[in-house]
Image (cartoon, rainbow, N blue to C red; front, side, top):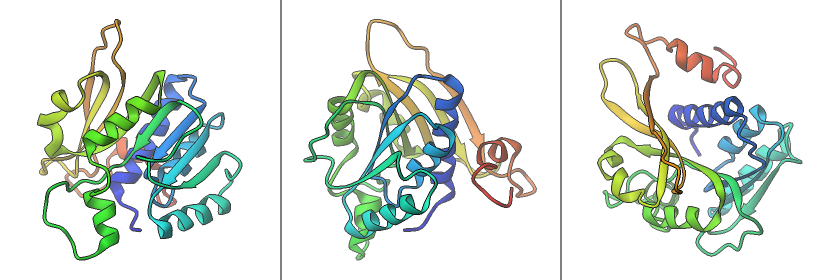
Length: 223
């Protein structure tokens, strides 16, 4: 599976956010892990966490197992093969992370694996949110990477949740936003003020921005 810049950015953003806030996260679930990219980035920055990484596609699951086994963190990441809609998890999680499929209800590819990875015929976003509600700890967090086109739907889709932070992502200053990175939690009686900011991947000279470099320098060898 192809590793994308926005997925790497999301992994670094989530890992740094948890490390910075020292939020006491111990048990993490990476829902639809693919080849375990997010789990590996998370484990690199946060040494006290244990991660369950679940993937439905058999080839991706096997690649994730190989990647985890070859990493410095095999004892902290458990790769599971299964469908999140039917898998019976043993615990509630302090943090659920997901890079869910982007292209619901759009033109389908003739490649079945691409359809699973990008269209999510098996798990729509509203189903993912129901899954999060069922498996998140009472005071737990969730973090998602979404296409910017879902921005107008966020208020309706995320009823029952409080959104802690929304970060809009653009390729450069001349591009529109194309991704949303957000972190939230279950709604409770304490009102949450949403932090809204943005990140730009490249500057006007098409070089990586300082903000991008700061987040990714521990993962990208050439930064």
